[in-house]
Image 1 (cartoon, rainbow, N blue to C red):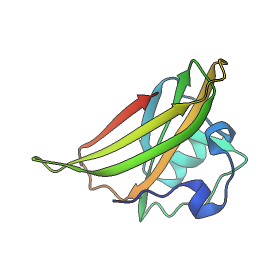
Image 2 (image 1 turned 45 degrees about the vertical axis):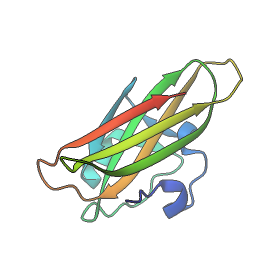
Image 3 (image 1 turned 90 degrees about the horizontal axis):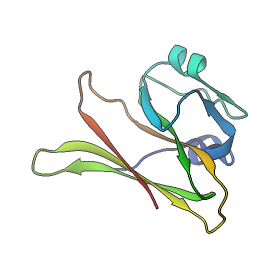
Length: 121
């Protein structure tokens, strides 16, 4: 299944460093505009249709500068569990970094079980 991002859907640039959220090595699901407006700020603050999407967002510290953030969303058999895998790919530059990752997913059912796998490499 595909994920959407602020870059692809709203034309935002470098959100891994320009989105601001008060988290440290953690993530969360944002399900409403009110929650989004109160918890996320920065240069890019799009008008998300929370009737259609939920926002998975988090912040992760790394030992090196982050080059790329990759996403894979789907179901894992045999239980058909929803899983979002986030791969944070570091560069060779040895400078600690804090990166914000995010994905817009089709609206999750109340009580849906979503697993987020975070890999820093």
